[in-house]
Image (cartoon, rainbow over all chains, first blue to last red; front, side, top):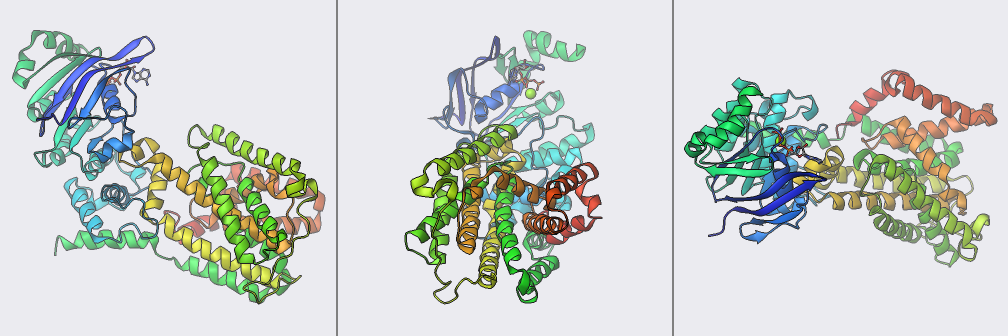
Amino acid sequence: MNAALEIVGLSRRFGGLVATNDVSLRLERGARHALIGPNGAGKTTLINLLSGVLAPSAGRILLDGTDITALRPDARVHRGLVRTFQINQLFADLTPLTTVGLAVSRRLGLDRQFWRRLGSKGEIVDECVAILERFDLLGVMNERVGALPYGRQRLLEIALAIACGPRVLLLDEPAAGVPEGEREGILAGVAALPVEVSVLLIEHDMDLVFRFAQRISVLVNGSVLMQGSPAEVAADARVREVYLGEEVHG
Amino acid sequence: MSAAAPHAAARAALREVARWKPAEYAFWAATAASWFLLPGQHLLLNEIAIFALFALSLDLVLGFGGIVSLGHAAYFGFGGYAAGMLAQAGYTDPLLGLAAAALASAALGFVTSFLVLRGSDLTRIMVTLSVSLVLFELANRLTWLTGGADGLQGITIGPLLGRFDFDLAGHVAYAYSLVVLFVLFLAARRIVHSPFGWTVRAVRGNALRAAAIGLAVDLRLVGIYTMAALYAGIAGALLAQSTQFVSLDMLAFHRSADLLLMLVIGGVGYLYGGMIGALVFKAMQNWVADITPEYWQFWIGLLLVLLVVIGRERIFAGSLVLARRAFGRRG
Ligand SMILES: Nc1ncnc2c1ncn2[C@@H]1O[C@H](COP(=O)(O)OP(=O)(O)OP(=O)(O)O)[C@@H](O)[C@H]1O
Ligand SMILES: [Mg+2]
């Protein structure tokens, strides 16, 4: 069976810097896979390559067995590959409701309609409400996104990705900058995803990682240092040295 | 019940965003009333209505698409020439001329839109400016086609709907321009509240994220730019038809610059800004020119400096803030 997402020999150079170095990785259907690594390891660069924001210097990306390396970002989303951003990328002037409504309209293929009003279709509103509710955003659905507290924006960041109907979801540090107490809520919505959705989670919070992941890949200096079960990763001497060591000192 | 309540609230919120505000009714009622109440001013009012449409067009590009254009006169002039040439060729029906201008300018807008897809605001300013300069120079050189610096001569426009002849006092012309403005405004209003319209706002707000939710960013900009060019072309045709003359001046840089000023005066992104700006700009131009014609540039310059330094809101003593709220700027 094809992997939900398969990366083969992916590389990306920025001048002399090799930010992604011959990375290969398999994401099985329904995977709960974590990608960890110290700051500057190339995690976000990998997500940018997967989502089409950056073009790779070498390598291939297969989504469900189909080569998508040359596809535009929006075409990848249409095939079910959706990401979130480490630094919020939202529509500041919109409201959470219209933001999510937009994404849902897109997914249902109604985004080119120019004569009907947004939300005139009941099914879109139903979906919006369900998603906003799951991420506890109903109470602020008519506020300006740019004026929302950071934690709420972080929730919307994920809600917006979910509204795109992902089959493979790439989460780039969803809990980054969120206070300890609010982190649970951030991943609760992800945990509620259907089991067949495959998730790749980048995260520095080891508690979250070990609770969430069935499999972990460790990225160091652009290369995959090792992959394995959480227990294997936790026991690996190189990982402790390179990654966990750095976390203690840094 | 508990499940239905948020649904109803969300539906209502989305409906509310697109709902007609009382100030909008008032605006259009006053506009319609001006035809009956100010018959002596119809020539000036007609010009204002045409510039209002032209500014509405720029608002679509700038206020919704986020594309700063300093060459919007290209589409205005192109539409004017298209309508003028059609009339010159003997097809004098005004509505036919409008349709031809709309098609011609939309086609030009579609083709040139690919030039403004990439780059910063500054590149876009330069590209839009260049397009209009090229067009101006072409019109200047192709004398056999455009009449060059003399303009298109010998245009006669037939009666509107085959019944209403254009009169010297501009009664028919103003009614014609107003109806066209209103119809096109209604269409624009519908479109900006449609899913397509929201995707255009999303692209302006954050193109990176727009692509990451599956929107074809380029297509959105091509779409809104083409639509705006169509609007500008119709505005140009209205001016050509009501003055029965087309000159290089319609393509000139100062048209684009004045237009941007009008929009800046009225405020971008809520559809009424361009129309209000056109009114303020033209009324001021007219009024100042009566008192002291040489200093018109000075006064408009001063107004702009004040707008920037003190802020539009404070100058108009909050009235524009109120207007924007009343007209539903959040769209
Ligand atoms: N557009 C770019 N141009 C040049 N260098 C870049 C670019 N993007 C990333 N880099 C470099 O590539 C390396 C990897 O960066 P990346 O953002 O992928 O790291 P990361 O693992 O996501 O780090 P963090 O945990 O801090 O988010 C860094 O050295 C960074 O400076
Ligand atoms: Mg990162």
